[in-house]
Amino acid sequence: MKENDISYDIRGAAFKIHKALGPGLLESVYEAALSYELSEMGYDVKTQVGVPMFYNDIKFDIGFRLDILVNDLVIIEIKSVETIADVHYKQLLTYLKLTDKKLGILINFNSSNLKKSIRRVVNNL
Image (cartoon, rainbow, N blue to C red; front, top):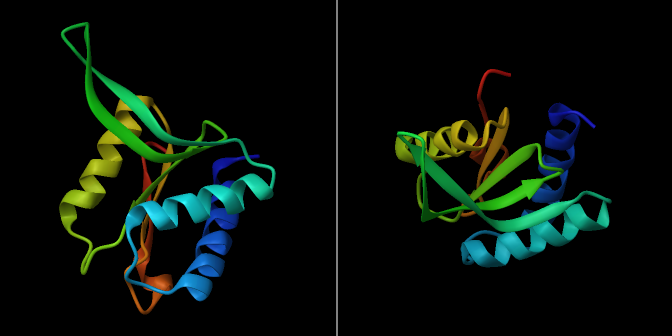
């Protein structure tokens, strides 16, 4: 599957979870539910994936963690905050660049309108 196909299924799973659980829970709750839903769809799902940072050809394992990685193609960054800030987009874009991935999905589950709280972030897609 391509990134856009995976993105479509991620959105569907996020809407299902938001309808069932509503806003206001911890990010870890949404991460567990979304990981479960995507696994049930047959996707290879990894959570809390460590991301090293390279600087001057030196590898630093400094604790960056992807919330969810789907089929080694799409990064999902989950938030449960009042408002998505510009730094959240930049964080996801940096993760995409560090991992050489093309598509990331930023989801803020702490919203009454989830449709407005899901954003695609692309890296040369």
